[in-house]
Picture 1 (spheres, helix red, strand yellow):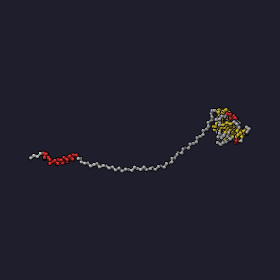
Picture 2 (picture 1 turned 30 degrees about the vertical axis):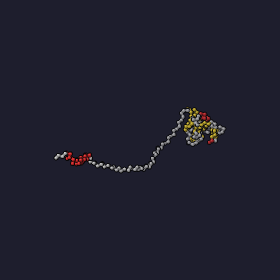
Picture 3 (picture 1 turned 90 degrees about the horizontal axis):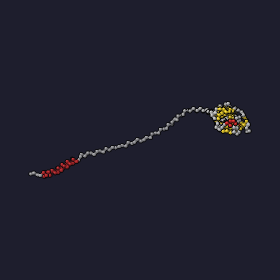
Picture 4 (picture 1 turned 90 degrees about the vertical axis):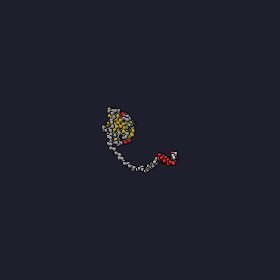
Length: 209
């Protein structure tokens, strides 16, 4: 007797379903791979180097070089005026010359000059180039000799030196007409009025030995 195919397959249905389920599970499932192990990196903080204070250096005294000794410069002799009007005094020959450039207009002498020359003391007649800075015509008292002088033409204010008359009394009479190195530095002369009239404020006066 022939059974229908359906009836033959019915007892196999549960097995078939199991087989199909197994096959399906095999197709869809994948072998579970173990999850990757998380790499744990432990970072140890390295302490930063502590800044060590550098000991300050003790300042060393710098030696300042000693400048080389500079020899003193030689004094430049004053230059004799070559133009314009000026007055020359020669303390060696006791002569005063009234000059215009290099021309001698008048020579006056002998005149009295200081007992000392170029000593730097108050009573000394100093050589060098000066200028007339004051003129006084009237008679004035001269304390060192308790006398009077007239026709004053000052040219060396540091020593109060200048041209003036011989020593006079209160009435204008000559007390001492001596010549030579007898004054306290000034230039005494019997021609003081002539020098006074020739001199001008600022005029060069060249005193030489």
